[in-house]
Image (cartoon, rainbow, N blue to C red; front, side):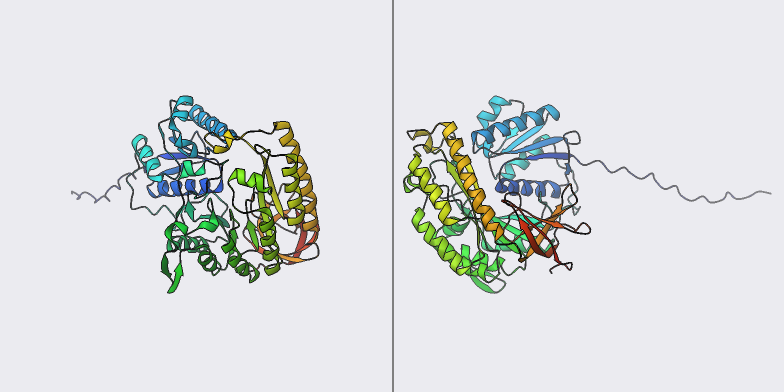
Length: 461
């Protein structure tokens, strides 16, 4: 008797191992505007199928986005490039210091390529040349809002590149060119995508935010059926429709800024202005080639606060500028006493290679400049403490950033930008997720921070 052979199931082929995608490491230095450039590059890389490595060891190539403004920033950038070369060996350099490739090549001849600031295409070409992209264009690797380097609940929105001002201490126009405003519809579309992705706070940034649209001659456009112009006021008004916190940074005190203050009083955008005054002495402001005079500025601040009494103003100042006398510095201190700004940063003047201020006479000795900085910050600490004390007893909306090492909830009020301003430190029964908006009762303050408790445990929608 014979039997037919039993049928056998066809063997399944062994699953193919998916090739590991090439990985890019990324080091981002400098200001928030450079951070946005980094986010754009990372978004494009991820869209092309590259992986993003969290360490030198896991990267096939490293990109270093540099800062080239101050001498100290240049030194930090060169050090970061050297570290990336030592730890990985394959490095592409971009950013502001990349505008001087010979300086980078002289210090680190091994770098693969050098590109300048906001040159995304050139960075990608350099990466493609040394680490070709994987062939996986069908993969959906990038969320609609792109990749970001900030926490999920806040994001920077860069509205323009370059700068139209020619301050004597600054070389930004040489590094990044003249003002180039983004189309209004493009900016608003990005803002909407950020909100759809869960962002609760948008921080508007550029070199000169209040000059937005000037280079485009305030060209008309249509958005959501509304006729608009590409200008600062229309931008702020439209962002105020999104239902999230909108915070304005790098605002020059031009007269047309006055028209935005009512939007703050109405609660459509945050009652917060970051205005880099830099000094108060008319003589020093003229030497700096800065707009406005201190007396007109004080009048404008008084009018802003009349319209919006809650307005918080942060600013930065430079002491020890060439030719600054004790009388000039005294004018600056008097300005601070009168203006009673909420937040202040102060820097000792540092020569920047290529800046016109380097040719000015009468340099201020470094020791004297440091002493003036200490005196200014001591005065501002008292003013800040007095300003914060007025908020004790109030109920304030806050946005949670996280938890500190002591288990306390760390949040910010409408008057505090991330990284540069103070915090609202809350005692809570349990950790609260970052990005939660709550009502906090302010119970105490010091020179920098507020302290409080939950006034209502229900999140604010």
